Amino acid sequence: MKVTDMVSTLLSIPLKWPFKNGVAINKANPVIVQLFTDEGLEGIGLASTFNDQRVKSLKACIDDLKETVVGQDVFRWAENWQKLWNDTMWMGHQGYPIYALSAIDTALWDLRAKAVGLPVARLLGGYRDEVPVYASHLLFRNWSLDQLQKDAASLVAQGFRAIKMRVGVKPLRVELERVRAVREAVGDDIDILVDVNWMWTVPQAIQMGRELEKYHMYWLEDPLTSNDPADWALVSSALDMKVAGGETLSSKHDFRRVLEHKALDVLMPDLQRVGGVTEWMKVAAMAQAWNLPVASHVFHEFSAHLVAAIPNGLTVEYMPWWDFLYQEPLPLKDGYIKIPEKPGFGLELNPKMVKKYAMK
Image (cartoon, rainbow, N blue to C red; front, top):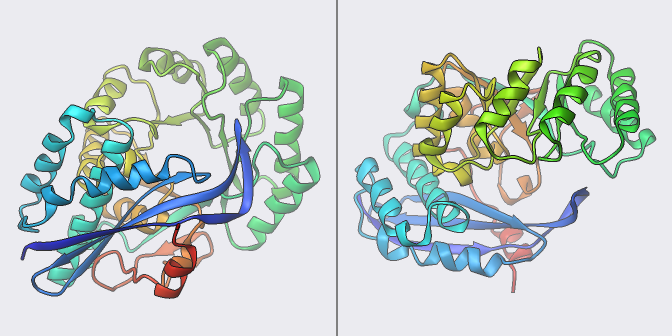
């Protein structure tokens, strides 16, 4: 079975819950990648950016790889990935080139699973049929104390057993007050994950981490401005709670340095930054060799299959920014996503929604 065509579609979606992480984020810009084959199958992949900024360059980067993927045998997956990697060599393997590679690789795995009539999760390993998720679409830095408590309680009422909040830009006393407010709103039985989004020095992260441990935080995510695994290791070794990270890393080569430094307790490869499904699974296998769990970063509609496929899959980040683009989003109940029995990722685009949000 060979790829006969590739189409990319750029969307502009106003966010239902705008947020502020350094800058105000008001719009999401997914680029849908559709691959078609000589046997009539269609595979879907995705890349994304925000705020209608530099989105056309992302689409152009994807479109530039059309000549690489068209004509390829879908089942020669190692060859497919290596060709994409080689053809982005001169652009560098970070940023939009790896985004483009990843979106196409994801669509290829959708095709393979559809061709054999299996969900991607089962084709890749089939370790479990449902995966825990944590709510990550609320509780941002620009939320007031009242908003934090109201939304945290609402998420628990919806069945989530784990939620994530953002900290990092306010004074220590204020950040702790916000954490305390969320803990009071949800009680002691709910896991609270804390994401700093790269704001602290090593001493700040250790100081704040020790204070956060008093409120039984589940993990501390991306605490440092530094991207040096040796610095990450200083924080991880100083704290009892788990330190998570890795969403900005590209390929197994970046993650090898993290493992060599024993820098993190939880690896978080991002599907579009790491190199698609192929490379995500390689990072997960490396993590298993080091006895470490793996959590996904955004793209829950695809990532749930990957976490479900592996024995060291920990949890899935739930960010429903564009679930309405699909005829049937992955089913979510009581804090779990059940992997559908449909072949591939189990996703079918809603043409009306795609047309409605297509960027002119």
